[in-house]
Length: 121
Ligand SMILES: [Mg+2]
Image 1 (spheres, protein in one colour):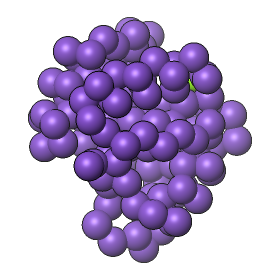
Image 2 (image 1 turned 135 degrees about the vertical axis):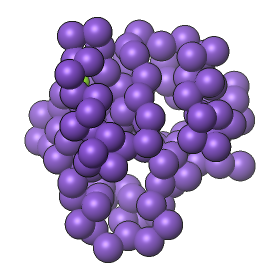
Image 3 (image 1 turned 180 degrees about the vertical axis):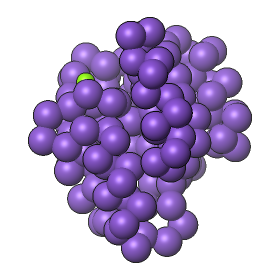
């Protein structure tokens, strides 16, 4: 079973993502900000991270940078979540190490296709 770490400061979005990912047969872990996500990755590297952009404590961008500097081997694939207003972040996120992006709000089909692109579904 592949593991997905869902990183979002919204509990509702984490719940929606968890539901979709569980139907895609992922084992799901959750983190409420980038720092929690980094700690989770240090403890056990997930196969893929679904990463929100705007979060308190540590943003998605800062998480990407910290992950790059962490020395973690076998880095997870990272799909970052953006909104229409955040389209300008896509290039910055890819440059910082994200593999793919998904627009919020996403549905099962969209998320599954993005996970397929990064080789995870
Ligand atoms: Mg957020």
